[in-house]
Amino acid sequence: MPFNSRKTVSRVTDWTNKHDEFCLEHAFTPSAKLLWQWLVYNGENKELEPDLQEEFNSWVAKKRTKPFDPKTLKTAIKQLDDCSVINIVRKFSWKVYRLFLRPLEWLTPRKKPRYSERFSNLQPSNAITAEDVVNNNNIILPSCSPLSPEEEKRLSVIKLCEQYGYKDYPKAIFSHSLEEIKLILDRWSKEDYEELERQHSILHLCAEYGIYFNPSNLNTQKLFFYDLEAEIKPALKYFVKKGGHETNSKCEPIIRYPNGFLIRCLAERWWEDATYDLAAFLLSMADFLPLRVPRDYE
Image (tube, rainbow, N blue to C red; front, side):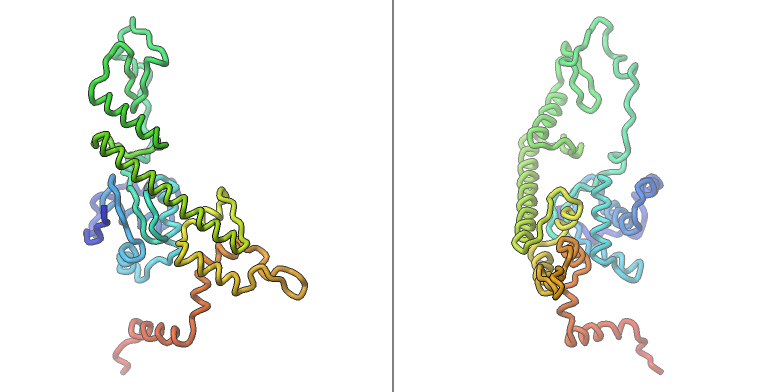
């Protein structure tokens, strides 16, 4: 579903004190909290495709005079993902995502019913074994009770999702038919595979430059935030330009830690500074002066 950036976000209609409490409990950064608020105002419990640079940052610039830098945006989206506020369905680039925004009630642990409540409707003579119990959102069904069509469908949906390796899925999925759900799962699986292929290409390219990343390492996960063509390739070329694996006169490596160098290069976009010459400076000044110098010099 395309992201609706025209929706008014100036009035707080869906944000509550419970959202604030969740942010405090999980130590959200100001940028992560503001991003979550902005997403909530545009709709929970559905897929969104926000452009953090063009849409979110444009709104932020009007509120705080300047937008967030790319590193701050990446940290904010990662924090929301780590706390399960969002589920990233697909990452198109460092600033454009397809994501599912979970409602707040999905993020808070649900109270388990008391033992007496769970078994209050069962006849004392009905002995229940492990094979007689089906755990489907705390619904307990004895073997002697036939399943209703709705319960049969829910079980079929859960089994289908488990076959595709999904144990965390939105409740809204039960409103679809089995055929529609299979199409959705096929699409999710295809996108997951494409993302794995993209990550494999990144690791393989870095290896060609003699920089080897462990896929399970934390820094490697940071590497996957960046676009292969627009960011990682220029950063690798900059690595070679600054010395790569060469040594100095003392036979010491010019760049001691290539992995860390590449991660910092990506985070701070060092290759852009290398092309910042006189012409780029004059263009920057042309945009800089009218915004900050009064027109009435007298």
